Image (cartoon, rainbow, N blue to C red):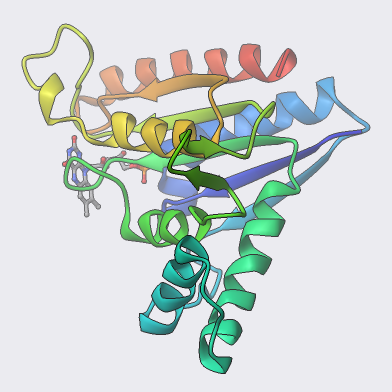
Length: 209
Ligand SMILES: Cc1cc2nc3c(=O)[nH]c(=O)nc-3n(C[C@H](O)[C@H](O)[C@H](O)COP(=O)(O)O)c2cc1C
């Protein structure tokens, strides 16, 4: 029995293209893997701790092998819980809208909490950085108003997909499947076709995920 963690980062819920495609994925996944558990982490309904001065002190304490002060230890405890919860999943599904060529700030906040030494990556001067979240696949559903595909003149503006996949690769998640829902800001018939294609891809990927 595996646990799929679904991380949702659009606040638009029923109107969100990324979430609509994710629902299709999750329905197909549940049918194909009835013994598995699925947990949804809605980043707009979750109170994430600040990644503030104490948390940063704690992160640098770990990197430099220094002890924590009491306030650093408290901040680090909250971060450890988030990382341990993330790492406890066997598989990941992300739905990610493009915001200002990148990602919504709630997802960036989550990434800043989850990328931690000793928890999701390690560092040594000899071997450099090593991701610790290994052997776990991820599917990412990307939505964007415009089209940033390989033939688009705007493709270099796309910092959404490269950033998310750099983050995942850094912590060790390299088995990645991607679904693009784009363009979502277009004529209704174009958007309907884009959604239908993405939903079909999602259902297919979910079967064998
Ligand atoms: C704050 C904000 C910024 C956006 N920035 C971009 C952008 O840089 N490029 C783009 O193509 N679309 C942009 N959009 C449009 C969204 O990517 C598009 O509406 C997408 O469908 C949102 O995903 P969702 O439907 O899953 O919420 C932006 C939308 C919002 C709300």
